[in-house]
Length: 311
Image (cartoon, rainbow, N blue to C red):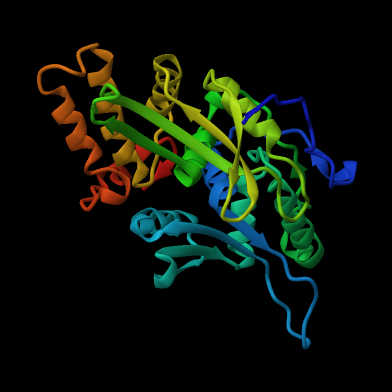
């Protein structure tokens, strides 16, 4: 279902104006990446009240597929606070931070970099820190508004794609009724509304669709009955925009390996001779080791320096 986006702005809907400040300067590359990754696969738990006289700290979580444990471990080392809990039944691992020191560092990193309704939870965490640990702060933490800068300017979209994006190759063999079809596609999906605030993800998904020169769609998941925003690109022009962005703002998860193979396939297709010579075989080979079919992982990219993210 095609969806025509309308202009919306909910960044200040849940906060008194006294908490709002303009975005600070000197932001780092990894800060915006972490914000994007959190907005895709993270959540913040805030204690409702003291229970049985015990005081509980909030918890900052980002969930990773178990194959991305090396990235979770590197982020843990970089933050310097927290732990990783493995969930074998879900084939996942969860990076968690609950110490005040760690929460303050994360807020310093992602405050002002948020672009989705999850900004609401960041504001609540700031409120909690200001209320419960003001004596440990050199000054009150200010809540910074939603980032409205161009998506091409920072690593936010790379982090969001690492969480919710996917790269695929279509390689359909010819039949008596149809020709052989080979194409590359990229897909990005997210629920339409935040479950806590009911705020819409329309604004950010419309911006991403516009950035990638494509349209925004709504997908209905028949199993759950839920609707999702979906961005899907196949065209050479849209894929070229995405490649230009990701070459300048690298992915860090295992999706970088899928992306690399996907780009190789796209380059073969771009020659215009995908149905001759050995190109179909090369593309089929690339497809056979991507995504769930991948069994070998190379994490050399985590040894490189990405802006000020020393891995």
